[in-house]
Amino acid sequence: MKLMHVRNLLCVILLIFSPIVGAIDRENLTYIECELRLRERSSRKHQDDFKLTDAKNSSYASFTHPHIPVKEGTSQNWSGYVAVTNISKPKAFTVNAVYGSWVVPTLQSASHNTWCSMWVGIDGYSDSTVEQLGTEHDWYNGQQHDYAWFEMYPNYSYEITGFPVSPGDMITASVEYQDNNVFLLSIANITAGVHTTIPTSYTTSSTARRRSAEWVMEAPYSGGILPLSHFNTAYFSSCNATIGYMHGPINNKPWVNGMLTMVKGNGTVKAAPSVLSSGGQAFSVTWNHE
Image: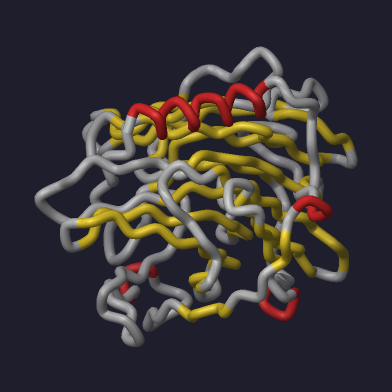
């Protein structure tokens, strides 16, 4: 266990002090074909109609990833950072890409089922769409389950089956706007040396406003916010965005950034992000309460 923590820390240190990066370096990785498995839910319009159990595989929960704000700087289900042109009134059609890396957390055991997601995405902070790609980490039936997924919310979410995800792995993901309402979603497991890209037939959105870029640890939603997995401390790094055709880290001066703390309805902190690293590319999120 100590060796895994040391490896995670070394990966984070290397990424914090690496130059600003953009798209995944595919030359040093092997491309793998992955199957996309639909996550069932009964309605695209009503979050409360979402089915908890995937009809195709009852061993996994089925959920969605909307933003549920409390007030500025807090959320009931998101913790991390957002970058926008303006916090109160983000300008539409300005975010062209978001990039980020994270270490797959090792969960603490629990007496009941818990869930959490780590992802990068565009939109959701101030509008009703989210174009997002990440990994899921659940404590389910007495053991940890990890997998990759994407969602063009409010459309259905998909599990990226065949893509390896294990505790301690370094994951890198990107969401890039191409043109004509098409987004390019790519994910890599640096530890395993593989990457894949979601076919663009799944990643078209005519309603995306492209107002915000996000780097998020989330408690997923399924008829209500699910109990947050005890992930200890989660590490994000190499976090960059392209906004208004300017590329830079979260705290790039041409735009503004906001910290999101996950809280219960009564204000109890569930997960809190750290301050940004000196280069503005890295931060951590600490678990406080499920």
